[in-house]
Image (cartoon, rainbow, N blue to C red; front, side):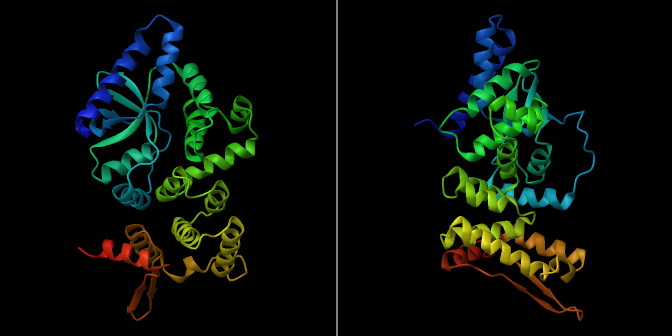
Length: 302
């Protein structure tokens, strides 16, 4: 039996051969076929072989958000690969996914999954991705990633993309919002454990902690989409006190709120930090069932 390390080396050799073929072939059809294959292939690339994009417009990064993503990567891995451009033998430049790239370094990863592009083949890439979207066997996350790649790498607006793929603009938006879901929720969509209706309801939540808690409640109790939507409406009413003013963030000062969020990210559960003015308090960790309790115990125990 071929071990994983040998298998990765074989895949790496295959991708390098495709890169060479895509860059050197004088046959347009052969180059297009190589690019089409590359657009779907994912390689594990050493982080040290990737340089950041010098044209990245974003210069400031929220360290607490990066740390939260790093915690998620340690526990669940990377769901959506980054995209890089081949710059030479085993040298690459980041095109998209710098947040995932930075968080992976914080998480202590040595490699990162990546799509590899060849320079100057944007039109071929666009055609390959549009063709890929038409496949019937793609799950919602794979479709969402293809849409997002077209937007980021081919500089398409949602309107232009909707014309390319023959879908309503709202459909494009609904799919790309799925990529804001927590990695474990995205994984459940990939595996068919969560419907598109459930996913759209969860994607409307800006609070990642509430998002994951609602996801566990919905799956453990086998809620319909309507039941989930009602639960989210009830939660929002409770959080705002029915007056449109968020009480959750008023309850704690920012420093303690950050601690609460770090605990939530570490445990993958809703954590309530009940802090009193005297300096005393308690940490409350609700669980939905016995399985969820044992999962929490596995995380808490050394």
